[in-house]
Image (cartoon, rainbow, N blue to C red; front, side, top):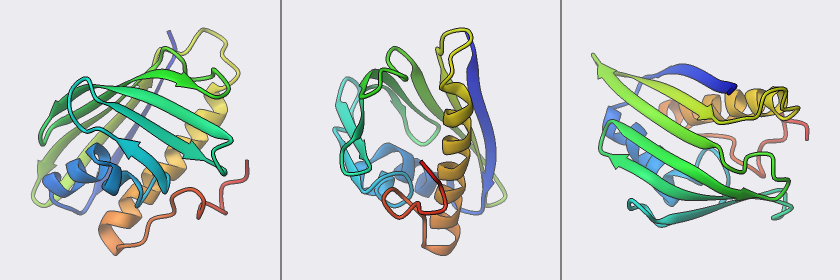
Length: 147
């Protein structure tokens, strides 16, 4: 099955990166302001985009502080992400945290892969900017990203 992967290096402590990807408060600073997340294994999350026209619902599959966060996508408005999984693996060295992002489980030939690749790249750079400068570009502030 096709998968998306990104590796990004962030000049921030690993625990700060972990908080940014594992809590609703953190996610609101870089991915979407419309975020609700019960941050515990088995907890649920809902992430809305563009006035709730696009909604992604997840179950928290794994929280291993400060190394790993994983979600299983239960449903998405378009159905594009249904049954996929999202993970953030973190490793720190000398004040720089490497984040290996993966979005797995797309069907072969899935037409959503190119758009998802671009969007995740954009939002992961938003995460980096948020942690390094204090200013991310979460939805709806993502005007650089054309729908």
